Image 1: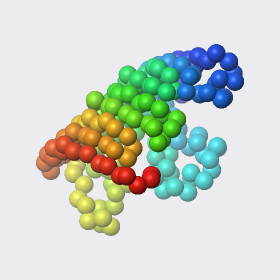
Image 2: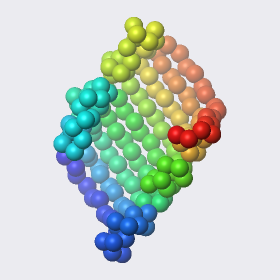
Image 3: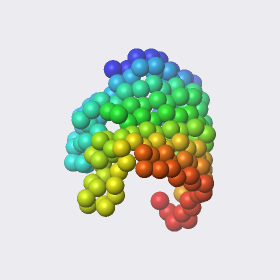
Image 4: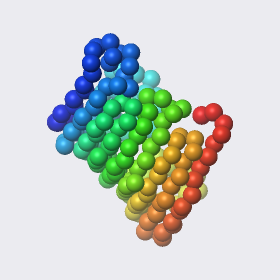
Length: 173
């Protein structure tokens, strides 16, 4: 279920296909519900991925507001829920069509989950990790896929960790 507006503006159909970076985008989805199973129609091999298969067991719900062009996107609001897991945030993504040039700046991102949801993806016995009952990550980050700076605060029922740092990988991704 998608309720809202998605507007793409382009000078010609040829521009849409040949120069997608000049396409203007305005999206307002105040209430969406997506079944990951729908992706299996287009990519049946996704059924074999254990994580995608787990995600497909419940719908993804939320709101989304994006404006800009396919070269510079402003994500004014993202609010996504899967079971008892939530992601909220806003930010910008430049050059999203080119992973080598892509940059992002998310001054606000919050991720909240619980042990029940996290345990579906992390096996405590196999990894030796004890998952807290409640988990909240409050972060901001910016950079590129291979050069990232972040400030984060992880708050759990077991304690709190604050992180300020970065990641750089000069090797090809």
